[in-house]
Image (cartoon, rainbow, N blue to C red; front, side):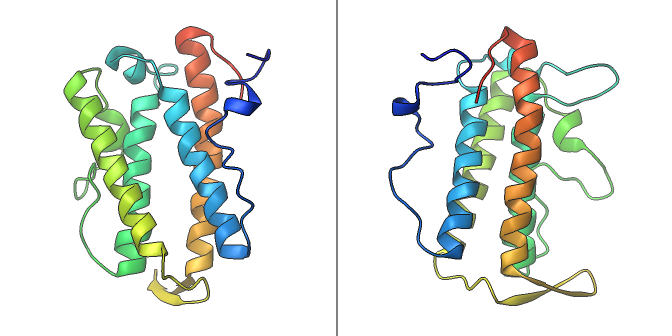
Length: 177
């Protein structure tokens, strides 16, 4: 393994060897790479390590990020793009930060988080196959293009992967891309 790298470049699962063609494929490739980075940053940790909080009073943890990103995937790809009203897997009406606050270090909580995240990612992937980036959907009293949703998701993951880098380093000292 090369110093400072999570994995050797030739073994990096985020490198598919496929060059995306067009805007939609390029944006989706970025999103998929960030998703894989989340999986990699959590790999090999037990429930207690995944739930370990950053610094008091923050409730930020790797497990909380998995739960939060399951909610975010659900919100944008199911609620906004499909026009449903269903709550995300870790949302309670009228309660804030349940995704982080209730991320506790049990095997059951970890399994539930990953199942919800994979389900939300799979639903998004399936939905986007035939989606048009130019399509506008109602949102927040106006409209939003599908393109803006996908770009927002790339940005959301990018921001949180910075958090994941620091959280993982605090857990076991592992650093790198």
